[in-house]
Image (cartoon, rainbow, N blue to C red; front, side):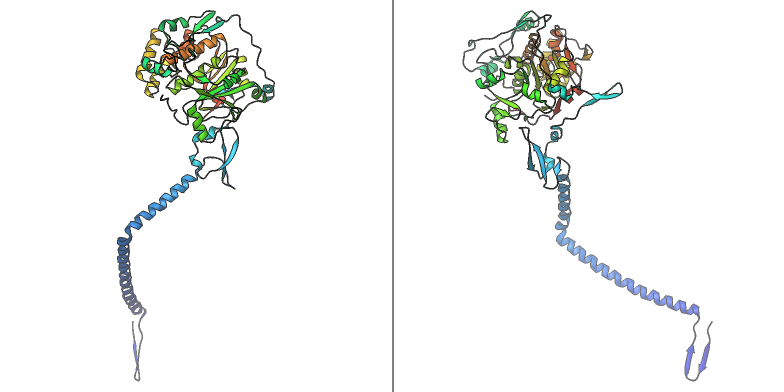
Length: 488
């Protein structure tokens, strides 16, 4: 409602509340409309400017985020844990081949091999037995290991083999000279002047146990290869207990043994067999043999004139024939070059041989139990040709070798990266027969070992220990690089 009052020449108008609100809303609407219109014009101009900038600099806008992302990923990867780093000086302890630790500045720890995490580990491997967790390898206490001695050798009167005679030629029946490899290639087999040409009839006779056993066992001719210097031979003849390994063709590195007692350091030889290729490869990495022939605890023996083109087969010589290389040794422990031996050798002999009244200890296979199943796996993994494996398995089947997966409660298949044994005429015969099989057939020695044990029924006291015991004996490092085959 409204009213008007006339007083002289002045006019006064009163407006009701409803009319006032309506007028205010109209003004507000007008102002808002103008404001909205101005904001739209500014936003349009800004959008046009951004479009012009994008057209001009689109390449930079695309590649800049990609570069930032790349830098971020590189930084994140570089910070992944690899080795134990001293944060104050950014230094890493790196074990060298001589067994000492040296400090070297490492900017990218992720470049260290994963196997380095296993190096120098001494922690015990355990398993559960009857609901109780216990060590896989039960060694004597440390104080007892220090007083452990090598037992006085007592030849068993019950042993069926008293004497071993090795077939050898002291002349040069194949034309003389240094012709082992040429004979191997023209002959079409792997028999050569180192092995001798074992016939099938000789092979069959070699499995017959007599008090005097006559067998091929390498070193057939003086011109057959595997030459060792007089100085090294003299040293090897002093060894009573030996831990040995080898790396031919520049293959694996040398890992220092650990976990040793002072008694073992004094009574045990540690011998690594190398060829010139491995020597050159190690020297290129700064690993020099000292004036006494050692790198750390290992005595390095350089072998000249390896008899086989196949470096794997050359490695079977120190692996299977230590009784030929160390004529006065009573015990030997073989360790593959891919592993670091980490237990006291005298303690290992006591735990695996003396305590169990065994003459040979070897690991059960970790994956399979049957030789015939292993043969299929070897072919599938291209570890040997199908033809060579078929010849071997056919022969074994014809000889009546069973397909059983267990012998005497143990797996019928073995893994031979660690071999612990006493040198007796019977165990020496076993190793000779095993070596002859890998020469005749394939280098995959896990295919032939069970067969030889089966044929040589006289050898009963073999300790086929479980896989967890093998894992306690060594730190598995894996093969570092592929060995180079001989080319001449």
